[in-house]
Structures are given as structure tokens and as C-alpha cells.
Image (cartoon, rainbow, N blue to C red):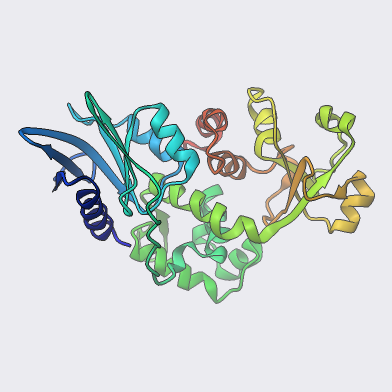
Length: 330
């Protein structure tokens, strides 16, 4: 569902549920998508509104930092996850789903609508710029932009993807304005901040589920002393919260993530861990081929994405530190 459809459907359903008149005006040249106004008798209550299919916690935190003048903020989405709704209510941020579900509290106005059946996203033609294969390729480019100008055979080998996929993905990224031509022989990344956001989402949704090996259990004393586990960094490294603690010394891990090149049998043999659906440690395949000995963890870009995709405010704060220390020059 495109933005115009989300807005139209959400307003129509809110109108029907409340009998209030609701209007939309595009925020021409402003920091938000538009202004949504609710008319109640002779009162007009306006909100600066941002519209998306769905929202992650870090996206909401970014919106709070934008200048929106005198208007409070409203989030409009096709669907919002329960955890996001709880966060918005706690911060008294209005939200409206396409179905008409809403939380709007402003002065003496309170609109709370729940239980409306979610409206499904319309099917959109897959964007080849952010497929599973593209996520691997973009990881290489975001880590070292010089790879963008190397021979395709070298790129394919380093990214672990098919040679024929590279021009297709690069062309798709050019169409979206994320790769631009500098001269006849050189290209560069563009709009990097937005590209990084898109990559984080695609990594969490497209690639990471497919490289998940499962959850594993280790001894309770071992997990309490997780830093003493003798990882061989050429084949297995920490990701997520443990890696963030190693990189920043600013996070006490509650969830444990490992990335590995090993098969399950070798993991069990080398690290004395066993599969368990409720295990403390979640393990993923190490898909990159960069020099892992440079870090005692997954590369900072992976750790950053792991944290940003948790929708945990504690993790997101530490992710900001990782960004400033290791990624801001991307």
C-alpha cells in the first residue's frame, strides 16, 4: 500500500469510527509527510504526520528529533506492532493504523480504537536493490566503498554471490539514486544515510532469517562468564549484544548472538553447546568473507544492524555509540 493509499484508507476508517471530520494536507517542503487535522465542532486539532507501511523504534526516535513547529506528532501506518504501540502510548505520541485503530490524546481529546482487523499490505513487485543477494553485496560496499569499483569477478567472490547478479543489483540501486556515476570508470554511493536505513531493514527481514542456525544452550556458569568462552575468531564471533559490549564496554548482554562458519556438529564439538529451542544463544551463519581477525566480534555494521533491529531502546542507545565510533564515515 503506497502512502496515498495508507492515508486515504486510514482517514476514511477513522471518519467512520468517530464521525469526526479528518483532513489531510501535504507538508510541502516540510520535515514530515503532511498535516492531519481532526475537526470537532468548532475546534481543529492538527498533527505533524509521518506515513509508512510500518515503523521501527529507531525510526520513531528519529522523528522526535525533527522540528515540527507547534504540532504534536502522529504516526500513520498500515500496521503497528503491539510493542511499538505501547512505546507510542507511553510517550503520548498519536498513532493511526490504516484499519482505523488509533490512539490520539491531546488536551481533553482522547480517541482509543482497537480491535479493527488489520489491512494487509498490497503485493509490491520485489525490489531487486534489497533482495537477500543485494544485502550481501551492499554489506561489502557499505563496509568499503572501494569494492564498488573493482572487477565484478572479485566482487562476486568476496560477496559470495553469483557474478550475473551484480549488474542487476547495481542498476537497481542506480535507479533508486543510491549509486551514482562519477566518471566513465568510477561509481560512488549516494544518499548513504537512507541507504543504511534500508539496508538495516532488508538485512533483518530478508537475509538474517535465512542464515539462522537456531538456538543453543550452554552451561549456566559458562553463559554468566561468556567472555571466557574461547572463540576461534577465524570461524566464530560474537554478534548483537555481546559484540556491542566488547566494542563499547557499555552494555550488559541479556541476549546472546554468535556468527559462525561452522556446521552444527562442529559447533557442538568445539564449543560444547547443544541445540535447544529455548537456548540462551542464537547462532547465525557468518556470510561475510572479510578478515574476521580484525575484530573479536562481527563487523561493526552487522552489530549495529543487530541492535537496531531489536526495537529495544537500551540497544538502540548503544547502537548510536557504535555508529559514532565505527560507522559515521560510511
